[in-house]
Amino acid sequence: MAPLVLGGFGYLLDKATESIKQQMLLSESQKLTLETIFETVGSAIVSINKKGIITNFNHAAEKIFGYQANKVIGENVKILMPEEIAIQHEK
Image (cartoon, rainbow, N blue to C red; front, side):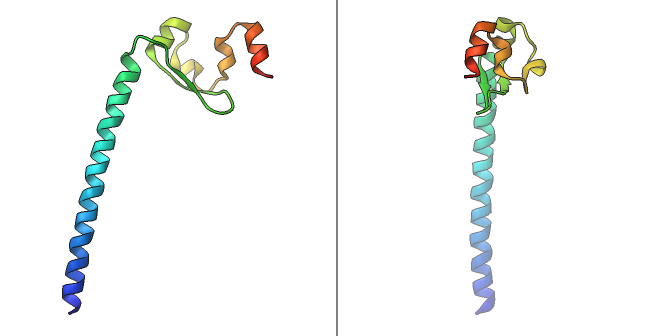
C-alpha cells in the first residue's frame, strides 16, 4: 500500500510543480511585456516609494527631465521639481 500512496503523492507533486512552472513562465512573459511598455511609451513614467524616493525612471522621463535613470533612481523626487514646489512637497 505504501508504494501506491507514495506514487500518488509523487504524481500530485509533479502536477503541482508543472503548474508552478507554467505560472512562472506566464509571469516572466507578463514581466517582459510590462518592461517593454515601460521603456517604449512616449510618456514619462517615474515611480516613487512611500518616502518619495525614485524607484523607476523610463527613457521618456530621461528625455523630458534631462537626467539619466542611473543618476536619479534612489534620489528624492524633489530633484525633478521646481524649488517652490519641492518645498511644498516636504509638508
